[in-house]
Length: 309
Image (cartoon, rainbow, N blue to C red):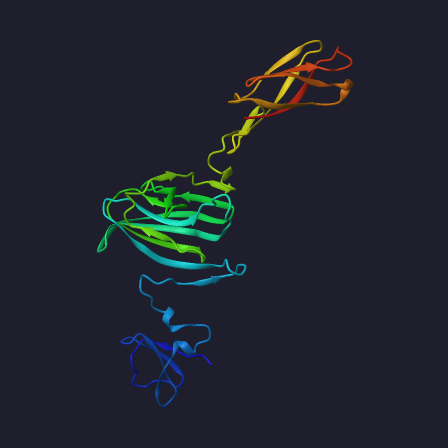
C-alpha cells in the first residue's frame, strides 16, 4: 500500500490511507477514512524525534565502530566565538610525554571559520584537519590557508597539547564537522593572546616525540643522480658512475651531506669480465671509486648508493 503526500492542511475530500503534510504544524497526518492521525517519530524504528531539530550547541552524533573505550563519534558542533581582534585556539590532542601512553584522542575532519560578527558573517573559511594522538604517536595534517591558520604545540595546564590556531582577526565563529574521539573533547580558548604557541608542520607523523615522516617537507630529486631527505635528518643519495681501466674516479654527490657520509655501496652494471668497483675515501661531497677488476684492462660503469646526514 502506498500513501499519497498532499501539501494541504485538511483537504475537503481526503482519501483513505493518504498521507498529508500539515503546513502549519510541519507534521505529517494520516487519514484512516474517518479521523486524522498524527505520526509520532518516536514510534518509527531507529528514529529519535529529538534529532529532527537541534539547537546550534548540540552534537549530531553517529556512532563509529572502534575498540572498547576508544571509540569515535561523528559530530557537527559549534565550538565558540573567538574574541574580536584576538587569536583563538582549539586544542584537540595531548602530546606524548615520553612515559605515559595516550588513549586515542583528537579530531579528523573540517574546521570551519566564519568571520565578521554574529549577525552578519562576511565570509567562511574551511580547513581539512587531522590532529590526533594514540599511544605514543601523533598525526598532524592541515590544508587550506585562507587566513594563515595553522597547527601548533602549546602548553595548557602544564601539559603539552596540539591544536588549531587562528591568528588575530575580527571575531570568528568556529565549527567542527568530522570524527571526534570520545576520550577528549576539544578545548576552546576564545582569547589565546597569553599563550605562546609553536607552529608545527601540518604534514608530520610523530612516534615517541620524533618526526618519522613528513609529507610536505621531504625534499627529493628523482633524477638518475638524486637524493631523498628524511625528517630524521638522514639523507639517501644515489647515482651512476664510470671508472676507467687503470684509474680511479671521484664521484660528486648530488648534494653535500651537512655532517658526514656514513656509507657508500657500488654495484657494477653487469658481470662481464668480472667487473668489480671498490669504494675508497668518503667525504661530505665526494667518494672515490676504484677499478677492482682482476683484469684491469677493462673500464666499466656502476651504480652507487650513499647514506649520510
